[in-house]
Length: 155
Image (cartoon, rainbow, N blue to C red; front, side):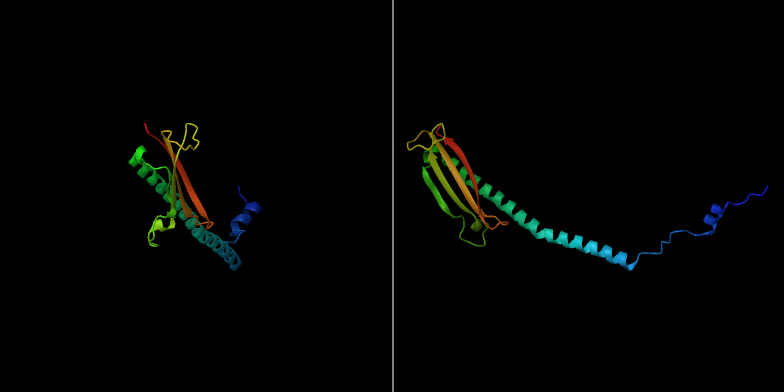
C-alpha cells in the first residue's frame, strides 16, 4: 500500500514558513526608542519634585522636634518656675545662615487655664504651654506653622 501525502500536508513540508522573522524595521526601532525617551524624561522630571516633597516633610519633622524640645525644656523647670505670658516671641532660632536652625522661628506662650481650658488671669494650678514653630514650605514657598500645646499642673 502506498501512502500519499495530502496537498495541505505537502504544502507544510515544502515551505519554510508563512511568516518571515528577519528582524525589526527602522520604523519599529524609532517608535520603541521614542516611547523609551518619553518614559525616561518623565522619570527624570519626577526626581526634583520628589526631592522638594522630601524637604518639606523633613522641615515639618524638624519643626515638631523643635516644638517638643521647648515643651520638654519648660517641663524640666517645674510648674512654679514657668512664667505666664509670652515666654519666647516669634524669632529665628539661629542667626547663622549656615545653621539649619536659621530657617526656623519659634514662639512660646504660657497661660493659666481652668478645668474647661479657658484662659484665666489668676493661678488655677493648671498652665497651658503653647509652642509654634514656623518654617518655609519648600513646595509652595509659603510659611507653615507647627503648633502644639500641653498642660502642666502644680500637682
